[in-house]
Length: 121
Image (cartoon, rainbow, N blue to C red):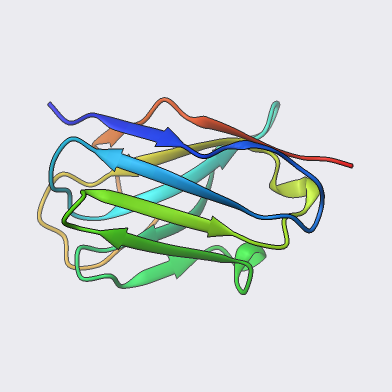
């Protein structure tokens, strides 16, 4: 019913930047970005509510910025000063039910296919 497509991943050196996009097929409420490295559990990174309230995991605060363009049904994750530990497959998830704020602990109703981010020298 709802499709999410991530894009913008790639290979960058430490200290570099990437901007990820999550394009939704229609309006959503909260959108969260998650990442998963091989052999590790999926980790919540950032989230944004329908009213653009935002939250970040401590490890990315000051480096990552999440934003949304409701007219395009698209959420962005600007990632600056990337570190090797940021490497992983990045997924976006959508809350497809009325929600006034974002919490990474909340259930995501839909998921995208993921985009690979590799930070290596």
